[in-house]
Length: 201
Image 1 (cartoon, rainbow, N blue to C red):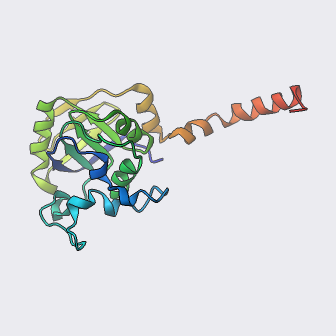
Image 2: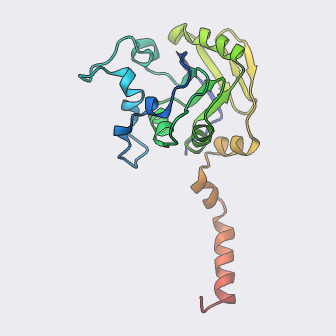
Image 3: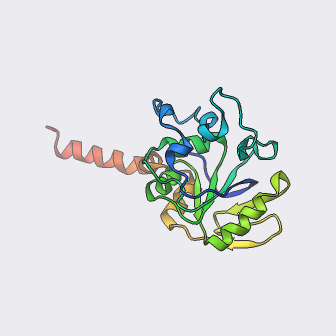
């Protein structure tokens, strides 16, 4: 998993509440178990018309937001089903951070396991960040996980809270498998000792 420490990038405004996981990645794209290749279908039903052509009015199709790395959204982001394909699609598109007033719990936790930083901030702060994001590619936000701050293009700073363990895992690039592999030496020692103590097992 990619490490996350400090990110300066284009932020896209998506002022919609209750963006659910089916909106993020529709059910017809859940057949794969690969984490790559889903970015093209992120927000598929909003990005494309029935013929598969891009909807020019959708924010991520606009030229100034095609390189978006930060998404500023409305309340209750990631609600709905627990599909892990949702953060897979977000990450594959290139978005590393989602900022919203609140998140669905399962989606929130899945983000950390896939190298995405979800940041919950008060509505007043999100409103400021949303307005900054509406300025397009000339307005770049900075998200600093170490200092737990988001800085607007004008230099206004907002602090956010994050669980210390989740922060450690994201900064070190450790998913569940990575956490296990970090203990490989201790696991090998235990197995060797167990084999000597119980050779019949």
